[in-house]
Image (cartoon, rainbow, N blue to C red; front, side, top):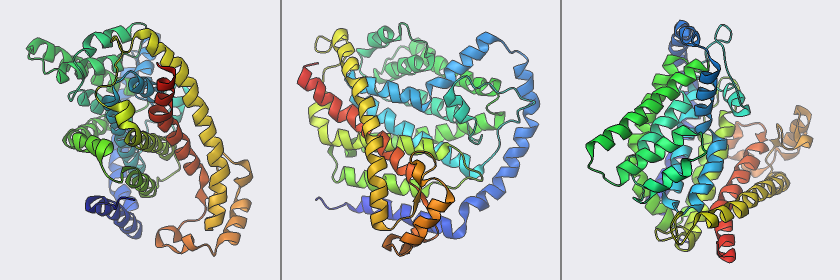
Length: 435
C-alpha cells in the first residue's frame, strides 16, 4: 500500500484535532449562544415582509417556485448526475458531485450550529408540495440551502464545458421543466468556450442572476425562509464558490492521478461525520449530509479505479457519432435499473454486516428506522452493558458517546454503493454491451 503523503496526514490530523478541541470547549453551543438570538430576532421582524409577498398568492406561482425548489434537491441530483456521467462528461459530473457535497456539508453545519427557526407557520403560509420539501421544513432555517446551492452551481458554471455542448444543451432541454439546470448549463457553456461576445456574456450573467433571485424569492414565497436566511445563503454560497474555484483543478488532479486516494477519502468521510455539529434539536440535516458524503466517496473511489478506462477526456460524448442519442437511451435503460438494484443490495448488505462488525468491536449501537430489533432504549442499554469493555470505547473520541446510530453507516454505504455503480459497474456493463 502506498504511504500516505504529508499533506494528507496533516489534513486528517487537523480534523481530528478540531473534533477533540471543539468537543472539549463546547464550541457549537457557545457560537449558538452568540448568534441564534440575533438571527431569531431578524426572522421574527422579517415576518411582515413574508406576509406581504404571500399576498400575491397564485397557483401558477406555487407551481413555479415549488418546481425551482426541486431542482437543487438531493433526489434530483441523484437522478441527474448519473446521466451526466454516462453522457461522456465525467469531469463536469464528478466536480458537480463534489461541489454539491461541499455545499451540503457546509450549509447543514451552519444550520445546525446556529439552530435558528424558520418563519412561524401560522401566520406564514408554508407550501410543501413534495416529500422532499416536507423533510426540508424539518431543518433549521439559516442559511437557505437552495439559495446557497444555486449560487455555487450557477457560479461554478463559469469554469469549463466542451464547446460542442452548446447544441447538446438545447437538445436535452426539450420536454424538461427544470429550468434552473438548463440555465446553469447555458452559463457554463458560455464561460468555458471563452466566448468574447459581450452580449452573450451579459445575457448569461443576467439569466443566472435572475434565477438566483427567483430561487431566493421563491423560498420566501413558499414560507420556507426569511430574508436573513436568503442573505446568509448568498454570502456562504459566494465564499464556497470562491474557495472551490481556487482548488477544483487540484482536487480533480488528485482524484484521477493521486496516491492513496480511496483510503484518504474514506478516512476523510468518516472524520467529517464525527466533526458534524450537534443541533439544538434533532433534524434531518445530518442524514442529508451522510447521503451525499457517501455519494462523494463512491464517485471518488470508482473514478480513481477506472479513470483510464471510462472517464478520461477522450471518451465518447453524447450527440456525437461515437455516442448517438439511441445509444444513450440504451445506457439509461441499462444503467438506471442497475444502480437502483445496487442501492437496494448495498442497504441490505450494510444492515447485515454493520451490526456484526459493531458487536465484534464492542461498539454499542441503536437504529432509529432501518433495523427494528435495535430500536428502543432497552436494546441500547443491553448493548451498552454487553459491550462496555470494548476497546474502541476507550478511545477519547468515543468515550463520551452513548449508542451509535447504525443507520448512519447504513445510509453512507447505501449511497456509496449507488455512486460506485454509476462510475464503475454500469460503465463496465456499457463496455460489455457495446453501448
